[in-house]
Image (cartoon, rainbow, N blue to C red; front, side, top):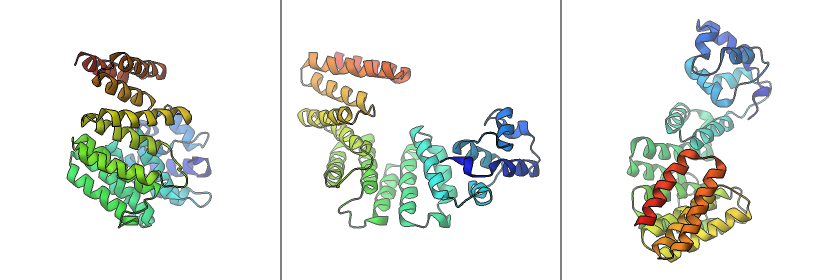
Amino acid sequence: MKLEKYLFGEILQSVRQYKNLSVEELAEGICTVDELISFEKERSYPTLDVLYQFAQKLDMELTYFFDIASKTTVHFPNAVIQLIEKYKRERNYEAIHNIIQQEKENPLFSQKSLKQYLLWHEGICSYYLNGNADQALDLLSKAISVTNPKRVSLSEREIEILTSIGSIFNEIGNFKSAVTIFMEALSNIEKLPHILNIKGKLRILFGLSQALTELGELEKSLSYSQKGLNLCINEELLFLLNEFHYQIGENYVKMGQLDKGKYYLDECLHLLELEGKTNLLRIMKSEIDKILKS
């Protein structure tokens, strides 16, 4: 969302002064003093997450900025969703949880699809913050029921939520349930006339191949991970590309085809090097060493 359409500078400055905060005090831990001055003079504009941090520090609702700073009509829920998606990519579940608690009673989120979105991410946070799988699975099931109580002919959003359920089953080691859920998700996504976000299908294929490997169904896992790899290549996506290489390599090694396995595992490491993911590269090298020595 572009914030140039909103008069944040004057509002930011007036609220800061009302709260008796200096420029240095408000900027601390969020941005530089020069950047804050630039925001207040509207020479530049804060990103949405920086604005959210200002709102927290000023002890005010983020909606306040949008309500009084808008030059035109603003769709606040879209701004919140974009912020949650950013934090989800960063795996900042604490920040997501705080936003949900702040907004779930907001009348702007009473629409079914928006209520569902918050409930979905509340379920995700319940697991990753508290380790409460039962509560998380319950919330995710309720999220699907908001728009589809009979759970038939799922929409793309509903399939994404179902995929989150499958991922949690994988996390807690209930691989049979994970396979059942991922197969349901795959069946539904393949019935859609078109897919808006192909990453959703890639997540399903990867989660399914992971669960099948853990169950020792290596041929099936290999088939689905190869489908995922081909989809990445056809769509020219890096998303999960190295993960599919790893999964295929692991399957081949466990099937006794060491040379093929090592080829795909080496490709996984090569891709991580190209992407500059040094931390993940170190972790994957360790995991690959374990596989090759097993």
